[in-house]
Image (cartoon, rainbow, N blue to C red; front, side):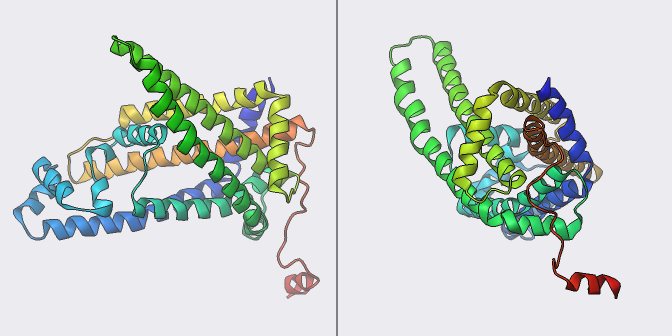
Length: 335
């Protein structure tokens, strides 16, 4: 089964490039630092030198927490019980499926992170496609080459996602759902209808994600310059073998669900101090690392499936990029 072999090959490529995992993990941490520092400042200002500060340092003070969220604004409004442990994961899924909008500071941080990820993804895919070390100069050269193309591809993907969340989501849950449940007397039936619509909307998101992932793969592996052509080629590739494409997607999703299940079992809760806080932080970062590894596995396994399907498992159209790519390189090496 090609999906299974590509899935295994994807993991091999991911673990063969530990520097990629480490780099993506550090980038994710750095993206969260400005938000954490800002929120820390708001909490410090609100607590001051009061007795509440000592109580909050020892354990969770629910009375202060409610007071803080009722009086704060901006980023401080996100400090709710849903940010603790596994509740944060559920809250993120709920926000995605319900199309809830984030506040401006979070949107700005997400936009910055997506921009950095767009830059890095060209180098990541090039590394996975070549299946050999490209070193820092080769990685960042490939990232720079594909950055403009991936920006255009991201703009096109953003337009499609905007249409899905603005019109399709509104039609499913604001128009269709009320009509389907208008005369129902059993709440369970209404819940099943809503769950079914979530499945439909989720399937559209999965299909869109797969199309643009394979568009990125074809852009890198075949050195395509037209993003519209890459999307069309991705549609053609998926259309020729949907079973393999979505079979691989299902395998990766299954492992991702298992990661979330483990996280649900070990996620830290509120309260505690000293060592327990650092243990909880360590467990949380381990989950972030596992989730990022899964994100990379999606890209690596999709690259493996595409290359295996087109009989060029070790081929990329673009030559290996070496700085400074001129005769001066020889004189520099000889010095």
